[in-house]
Image 1 (cartoon, rainbow, N blue to C red):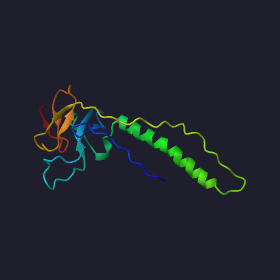
Image 2: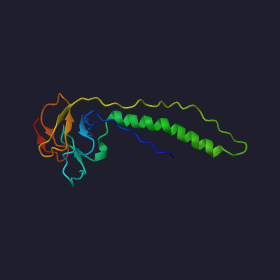
Image 3: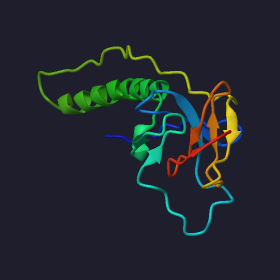
Image 4: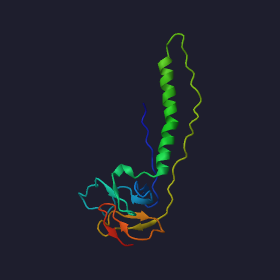
Length: 151
């Protein structure tokens, strides 16, 4: 079985789009450590939604668009893997032939990331900037500790 990597694009400021698994609103967090991150600082075991304040594990923040893209990408390549495996399985068997069928799974268009949202820095962890929707009203929560702050 082959391995594939799927690249999730960043905006021009280095932010990746995320979706809260609780409130389902989208925001962005910076991809990777910023230059201001203190030495020795480790990634948290959970992150907090800047919009609703609920926490979730690091792998729970995919947007619906990102999940759909991953599924389509995998399905388009899975068909080829299965066809190749069946062709190899029937190779050399007397009286048996295998003719692969057409691959009807479309290859998805690449994801793109617009340069939207407002950059904010929590006072408690200023090295972990966020991007929140321009029209967000109310407090924002720190991605690292969940502390509320005003924008």
